[in-house]
Length: 568
Ligand code: ATP
Ligand code: MG
Image 1: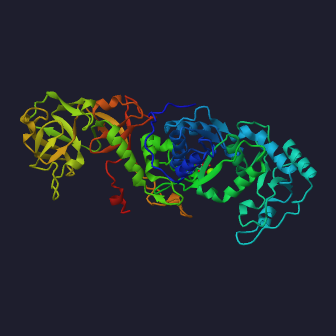
Image 2: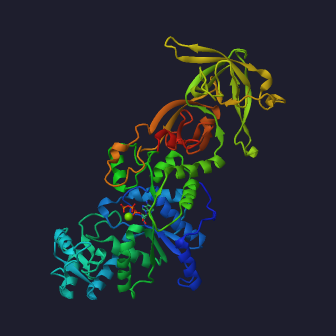
């Protein structure tokens, strides 16, 4: 199930934050005897997204830095919505990000027996009771933020009767919804979560791990704190929306002080909000099910499966997590910060290659018809140790259509009639003629070349020209499918409020073209990433790449052009 990560995680320097300060303080005063145990607790009801990556990097990163451990725990208490498919994909994503849970893979369902025992214990202590009111009535009795709740008429049901009903609930005697078990706390509490929350409900459904053993399932708030305590978690890190649940977390563990090994500290941090994307599980599922995207790993989605296929590296996501940091206040992070992290990583790590995305034929009139010769291009301009590769040169080439202008705009230094440019790693050429078809469209440009200017030969670089463009020999270039991806939404906040996010989809977020690639690119391995010189960073598609039919996805452009294009 575990997948080998691409990167060896070293202890990269991580900026400090308020959570690390708490841990440092605990270590100083010996609260946990130096022990640091965290957990990442996804519910297996969907694919992970980039917000989860923040939480994964935080939890696993802390364990790594403090010599502790981080557990991967599936919070599988809602069997209707959960599936093994999600468990598998979550494991794959955490491994891919570069983290290792070792032997610490757990499921909340592992604790169903204990959770049940503890519930009986609470009943016996007079701390929980069986409710006969309907869900609607419970809601009505609960009160509001401004008015206190009312006690249920069943709140003082005798302990023996509670115990009997709870056991019969477990035995399957009652239909869904007939009873629930509630914690007996305080219906007048200003915190609604403390107004006798439901801790068990009846659900006659099959569970993917416990099968048909149970027809009652514990609620999240009750399960989570106990799971943490049983696993001896020291710091239970969660997002801010759980702040109001912390008193309940503590209440449950306080009741069970003699039953569980420790009382972990819940600490909340702000969730990641990222512009131009959505992260709500419900909306992600809608996008996939309504086929508005091409599945869970659509490279435009913010799912980890999606960004992986898009070409993001695990290191770029960890860099992103470090850069945005951890705080107590909600804020929005601009998509360009994420994209910059990828550029930063790939600028270092991606070999350079040449591809022509929008080809225009260039014919060198004074180059012999059947001749060809080798040119040599560095695999990385700053890393001579990466060596060079051969790019064949011949009479008929392809250049980018944008690298020619019949009537050059002011400041345009690329090719135009009469102008000279350097063909990178090759010769200086001069444009002498333009071929047009009957519609007046440019079909080819003709040039002459200067044989004394070949890059890498003595004296060749003495003549300077301003333009420097890339090219491929037409007879050697390989056709490749290139998928030009862009942001999925045109609106920076498609996920917020009650916006109709489906109306905000970017119609140009996916464009498929046939490009020409240099011969070396046919050997690319799936998921190998490259800089296509002057065109951006691309990845060989991990699903569709084949030597006979290369497929590349654009991960990110070389520079942030979105601000200009969208006017955002
Ligand atoms: P839901 O509650 O709708 O199932 P969820 O996104 O909270 O969705 P979980 O599986 O419960 O999904 O999340 C697992 C962990 O990831 C939780 O600890 C949660 O706080 C954290 N998490 C989820 N979304 C974000 C986010 N945008 N930023 C940071 N952490 C997140
Ligand atoms: Mg959640």
